[in-house]
Picture 1 (cartoon, rainbow, N blue to C red):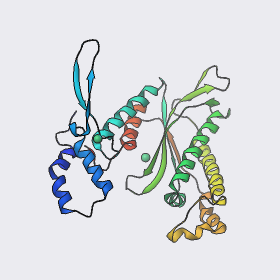
Picture 2: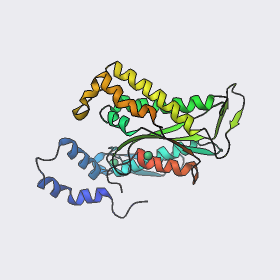
Picture 3: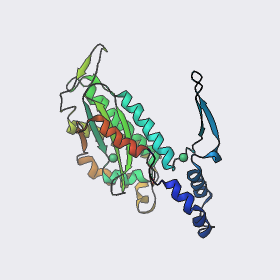
Length: 268
Ligand SMILES: [Zn+2]
Ligand SMILES: [Zn+2]
């Protein structure tokens, strides 16, 4: 459905005046984004003919800009991501699981986004797979859809992973489905403890290999002893893992995640 007024309409109406008023203060990158949004999707971006070879019906479709800041294109990308994820859903109960980094570690991640976001993904996934496979717990191989969120609702740096996990998995011999209990997937304290151990062990290894960078007030953490001292409180405290069946089903969580995975600053 087309919104009555889209961001592109405002850009088309006020863009030229804005550019004239801020001439010299807009980067080439910003000008390109403005142009993409203003022309999406119109004849200016070219087009193609879509035709049905059976009935002969045809129409002209203008090309979209596909810019990651374009609300129209990202809205379409979010819808197709959501459709594909919904198609993955199994006819079983689901759990919404969230892994969060403590503030002391989030501060390190802020200047080391690529290695630490990667580590967060892997440590969270390995934790889930390991505890789920343990015969003391579920004893099954589970599947996971995971999405990284780096900002909290207060727009502060707050890296965490959302997961959608089916309430069960494949038995280790691959012959049958093992169901979790309806309201309980895995013990969150056990998950939190393994997550903390995996994350901190691998974080120390990154530091030992010189793969972390520290700036400003954190530059002393480049030194190993200061780094270990910084981490000492998080080695003892509980790392919180959330795992509950979503109230409105997995579809609602996926819809929430889709809005985030393709979010633009101002959406239509
Ligand atoms: Zn676009
Ligand atoms: Zn989130």
